[in-house]
Image (cartoon, rainbow, N blue to C red; front, side):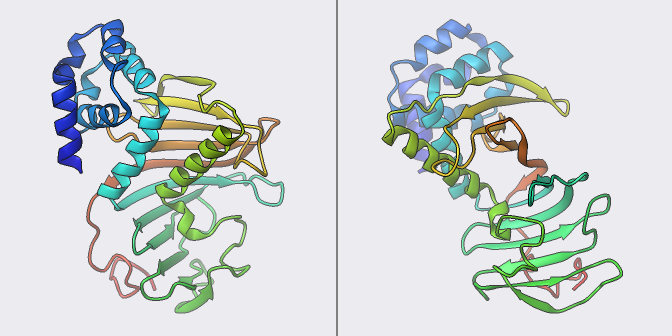
Length: 284
């Protein structure tokens, strides 16, 4: 699939490698006649060959605005199918029972999409420091393996995924910390908007600087729950991968409900014992 997409890109738009030399208007004109599959292949080429990182803000804006959000969303799903495992540091804020914590959870994640598995350690500087959990659907689809950390360093505890302990101060299942969760939410909201005759276009988009790096900012507004996940969602997308660095979710009054800041992500194979409690890196 990956080779096919790159072949499509080069055959339909041989100037792809020369994008950094083209004007923004020339990029817009060149992308406009491409069909959906061609746009996806073209986008794959410019990302995977580092072309987009050599483009100016104006050129990137012309490119990403022109390929459209269908291609950007499909790029995310395709990227995760090719890269099903990652390791990350995450700062997570979530409003629970109408309260937003003063400090974000600081988390170290190891994640596998299928069969789904996740390791989480809560880090110093945030709530629940020292706590660890492992979920591996291949071994037990209904329970987590956990310990509390800190002075309550209880070891070897199995708890139900849907128990009040597992969902303490969160509205989500631990497996929802993976990126495919956000892809599925976006796909569902897009379908619902389309079914209701509403446009799936950002109310705001463009290049921004965050944490000394360039990102593609996109902000979407919907009629809100229950038909849609959120009334307003803001994304900062990494230019090299097209995956979210930052996701912020707001209610209709612009009150922050959830914030996920993946401060670092390493894509690729994880250690064989990444989801093994006996891993010497862990404190189980």
